Structures are given as C-alpha cells and as structure tokens.
Amino acid sequence: LERAEAALEGASPKAPREKALFVGSAHHVANVRFLLGSPARAAAIHERCLRTIAGLDLAQPEAALRCSYGSVLLDMGRLREAHAELEGALGAAKRIGDRRTVCRARERMAESHLRRGDLKRALPIVEVCLEEAGAAEHEWASANGLRMLGRIHLKAGLLAEAGRALTRALDLHVSSEDRAGAAMTRVWLARLRAAEGKLAEAVALAEAARADARRHGMAHAEGLAALALAEAKLLESPPAALGLLEAAAGLFRAGGYLYDLCEARLSQARAALVLDRADAAVAALSEVAPAIEQVGAAEQRAELARLQAALAGAPVGG
Image: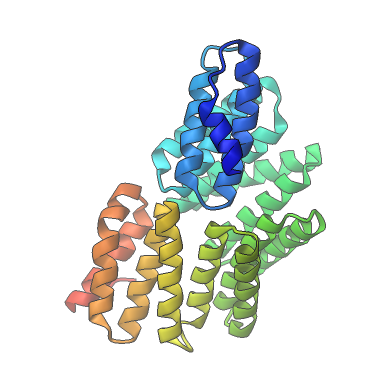
C-alpha cells in the first residue's frame, strides 16, 4: 500500500485518459486507507482525485468519488460537508443510472441523519435504499441497508425489529465474506443485546468483532467494538469499562474519527460518574467539549450538557 501511495504522489497525469487511469487507482488506494483507519489520508486522496477529473466528462467516477469522499467526511465528524457531498453524489448517480452509487449514497445519507438524531428523515431514506438494492440484487447494499435499518430501530427502542434487521444483515455479510461489514454488524448486535439485558451475549459479540477487526487491521471497527464492549461491561465492571473506553478513544483520536471520539469520551464521563471519579469525568468532558461543537451533533451537545449538570450537582434531565 505504501508503494502504491508513493507512486500516486509522484504521478502527474496530463491527458484525459491518464487522468481517468490515475483516478481509478487512487480511488482504490483511498478506500483501502479508509478501511484501515486513516480517514484523513483517504480524504486527501479523494480531494486530489476530484481536482484531477474536474471538467472532464467522467460522470460515473465523479459520482462514486463524491460518495466515497462524503462517507470519509462523515466518519471524520464533518457532518455538514459530508451531507453536501452525499447529496451531490446521489443526484449525479441517479442521472446516469448508477444504482450501486445511488444505494451507497442513500445509506450514508441515512447515517448522516442518524448522527443528528433525526430518525424521521433517516428511516424513509434507508427504506428506499433497501428497495433499490433488492431490485438491483446488490447483496452488499442490502446488508449495509439492513444494518442501518437495525440501528434506526435500536435508536427508536424497537428492539425486536432491530434484532431482525441486524441478524439478516450479519447473515448477508457472512455469506459474502465481507469481514468489515460483519464486524460492524456484530458491534450493533452487541449494543442491541446490551439494551435487551443480555450482557453475556453482548460481551461475546463485541469481543468477536474486536478480535476480527484487530486481526485484519480495521482500526475504526476495532474502536467501535471496544466502545460496545465497554458499554456492555459498564454495569458489571465499571473500571474495566473505563480502560476499554480509553483504548477506543485512542484509536478514534489517532484515526481522526471525531464523532466517535466524542461518543467514547461521553461514555467515559458516564462511567467515571458511576465510579464517583469526578476528576476523570471532568477530564473526559474537557477534551470533548470543543470537539462536540465542531461536529455539531445535537444529541451529543445535549448529553454533554446533561453530564456537566450532573458534575455541578444540578438537577439532571432525561
């Protein structure tokens, strides 16, 4: 991968065909970098690709690039920029009939709304995504859409519906040998089992996801699995949960996953309060406060205010 990146950095494509070939190779490298936990590097490669093909008649590569770039920005916590790129990718892909990019853009737009806590907008988008994925027989898109549907149901407290969607998603990921998708889906199944009070099952799922992500160098999935594992362990072993949350925060900070870093630090503050460790809670919230303002997710802002009120001894809202 490093040799491929070095070759790309030294390349200076001039003719339209050379630019198209360069973008095809660079897009693949960017996607691998993203999968392995380097979103900032992936974003820089995407930006160069988009500059390279500007003005050329390459509608499909440009739509796919904008979709991938929006996905990277989303995981970096740059929600507004991400949504704009994904909307642009969706419009371009619909115009040229690129069903694969249409499905991916819709699923990631649903993620964008979910991170803002807007389930009413997220749900119809993912439902359309699933219809289109089924019609096009795109198994990977169906699996990703089902995972997103499960997450929306989980957020809404519809645990049975979430379980059905996530289980179907995992089956599709496993049958298609999609390790990254399977690891991510096990993370959300672990959160579901924790919500159902099935803590042993939640721990087993999160540990399996974490081990698989670590084995294949998927830093983002490893951090999410550590976060899910910590939340499953919080009731029975808060000190262990704190250590896992610190590990997750380290992975998110190193990779530039700002939204998930905020999630880890908020969870760390909650765990510290359970342990009567006000000092640790204050430290976690001090780091996360400016990041939450940068991300702009309303639910994270509300949780920050709730935890700050708890620390100050003020009445805590629901």
